[in-house]
View 1 (cartoon, rainbow, N blue to C red):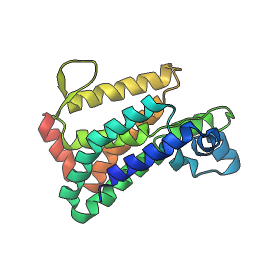
View 2: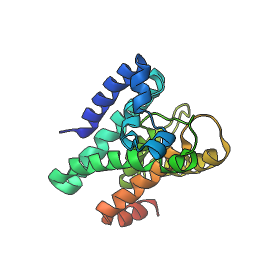
View 3: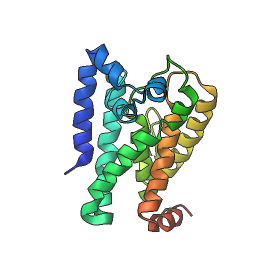
View 4: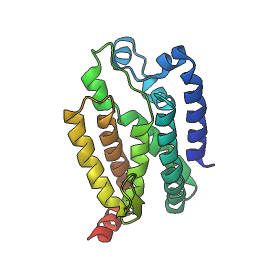
Length: 202
């Protein structure tokens, strides 16, 4: 069924619609105050369907296209026909789990909002890293390939540091929690991956 592709198409369509509809954007974005004070829990899902601008959308969808196809195919190989459903659980679970720190921090802040599927995509990327820790990745603008596990370590350290220090309107908390969710999810659904991962890197 290729859930990653349907997610990509749906997210692109709704994001493009929201670019020209401030009302739609406002209704769907992650706003902890609205969730906490008015019970709009649906925002834990809908915020991942809208993006700040075209570049934000294109980057997220490009990463989803690259890693989502591999992760979903690999889950089908691991879990049979249930693999596609596990991919959906990985993505949607990452979407819900990744903004929890932001929700706790900003639930009394009427002005805070966030959009974008970065947390869910972070979960997908780290699911890939768990399965293929030594796969070569090239990260723009660095012109060399590095093993996926090294990228993952650097990404976690950077996200943790920036979540504590930065005020750049980027959801570093969500990136970090999405990564953690992706790792834990993969180890829970397929415990053999724990041995596989560590045997590859040591």
